[in-house]
Image: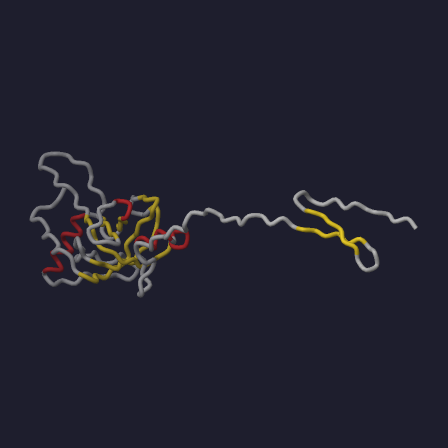
Length: 212
């Protein structure tokens, strides 16, 4: 009988041998080449810094950071925000006999940190008064003990206790374009109501003469 020997093609790097079994059959012996151990040289996993402020506080109010972080969910909704008043706009004095540009509508800036100087970390709040004269009159009325009249469906009472450094929780409509003529791609608040959590500097007394 003739024996047909079939050569097996094996990948390079493998050694092939033969050994005979008890019945005379040829058994292939395959020896695998052991490759050196590969140790990947990967950079260390960076340690990510914690967020600068919580997204929301225990009372469910947002930080300025958190409100903007969740802008896709929070924009065009009424939300509570907790922060510090870092600046209050007051129109410049106009000398008598001169015509000055009209003042901007009253507004304040709030931030997550008291005294924040970075404009990108501040947020504007507007819509609580039409002009500075209304605010001055409301402050004067409050000092005389007069309680503002609030009509159902009407505008909220004008704040008389806004002060730089105060910690406040403000509820408002979070918008990119407000009904008060302001626009901000990072968002701002159209004022609805507020609560002072920590007092700031004493508000300035209204001037004895009106602003123009």
